[in-house]
Length: 55
Image 1 (tube, one colour):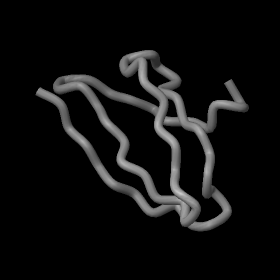
Image 2 (tube, helix red, strand yellow):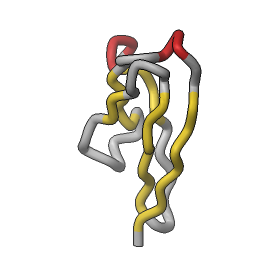
Image 3 (cartoon, helix red, strand yellow):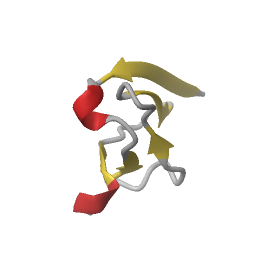
Image 4 (tube, one colour):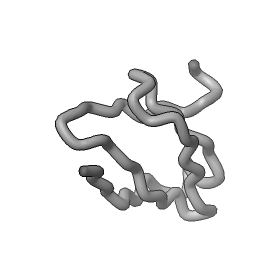
């Protein structure tokens, strides 16, 4: 099972690429121009999404 959460982070985080720091999810997530995106997590797992440029 997979969970997802749509989050609005604000315009300061618009058009940013995010990666799961823990490596449980392989895809990237890109926020829209308003800083909104849907983040995913595997069932029974934890994902920590960080801006790709800091990894």
